[in-house]
Image 1 (spheres, helix red, strand yellow):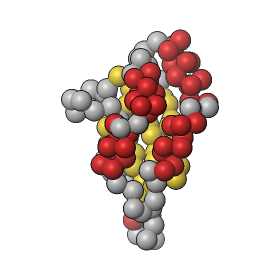
Image 2 (cartoon, rainbow, N blue to C red):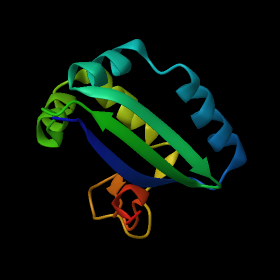
Image 3 (cartoon, rainbow, N blue to C red):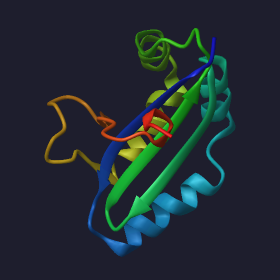
Image 4 (cartoon, rainbow, N blue to C red):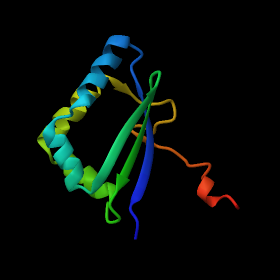
Amino acid sequence: MSGQRFCQALDLADDPALIAEYQRLHQRIWPEIADHLRRQGVLDMQIWRLGTRLFMVMETAPEFRAETMDKASAEHPRVQQWEELMWAFQKPTPWTEPGNKWQPMQRIFSLAEQPQ
């Protein structure tokens, strides 16, 4: 069984200094955060940016469950510190459900599913 892929979007505050600091912080995230992600079954995570829009691709192990990670994140003090810090830079997209940050995106195309 193969892993899972999650694609999500979030916006940044429209402030060049804040965007630069957000990118700097992501060049080397806190070790506890990387360890937490890996322990939850995240195999790879990439964040891409266009202007103030962020796009995250998360590749996970087959057994990964978002609910399990959410619970573990809520109980991890260092993860909560990281999330609080990140909110200084982030803002929900216009389509983000209340109380959420990263919003799942809908896949609308896959070349692999096209006839040959």
